[in-house]
Image (cartoon, rainbow, N blue to C red; front, side):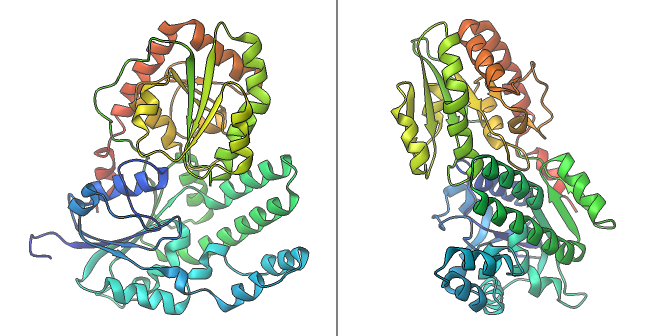
Length: 413
């Protein structure tokens, strides 16, 4: 026990947890907040999912220590050789022979030892790891002898192999066969890593029930449970703006291929149909970090704005009438939909965007399975403000039930 009577917990995260912004950072932040009610938290950030930002005030309040291990100083020599191959076809062949997911190239023996040394201190009751690709950094705790071995918990978030195969399908549909093959290779490597590591953890979490069932079936005997994505209410909800034009908003990190694909899909397939159906002027805003050139080029459409990163998404929600989620692939559950609900905005989503949340199409949001239906639903919201208000009210109620407190019972033990 620590001085304040709480047992110590080591939390390994691939990015700095936060209350807003990146969806993975928000999941990490909500989990930290829930765990901090029972444990003294020692946060070790191994920044494989983005730069190690400075911790916010909430993270500092939740944690006794915030540590950062720059794992990119260590790279598997085998992978360095692959990266040095100049011929693209030969490099792809060499990559496909690499035995682990590519991001695990940073989990060298030296790096794992350094991370454990950096986090040394109290006797940890629990080690909580976020994402499968960080699991190799738990090796010193998984192999600790009893009775010193801590409980080891792994939050997969989503079923990585399934997500990767879905992304491979998108890439192939978009004509990028080489990238599709890499994603399929990554999926195979994640399955192998799961087989090797999941049985060694005492508990495994996933965001969606379907993913939980998939992992439980593939790994009988492993304690697998749902740890739902949740959202912190942003405060009093602003009414939709009264002035035209009607504004549709999409929020996402465009480093994530499904988000970039969603923006391009909407503009190529839905936007022309919406123009034909629209009862009045409208505009579309794509808000988020790292838009690639193909997404930036969408701003050439008269109705479209691409902002790049923003400090706070709340003003963008407040200036929007509705939120669009035209995702065609992904994993886990979409925090962006919960975020839209929490800001009191109606949502039009594809089935892939809405899956796993437990929402009812037509009650909390509109779900459209084709470009024509997506355009029709967007036009419905433009014509029928009462429909938009009803969806927004029910969505806000749904989000209110998915606050950080929901995690505490699941994380107990």
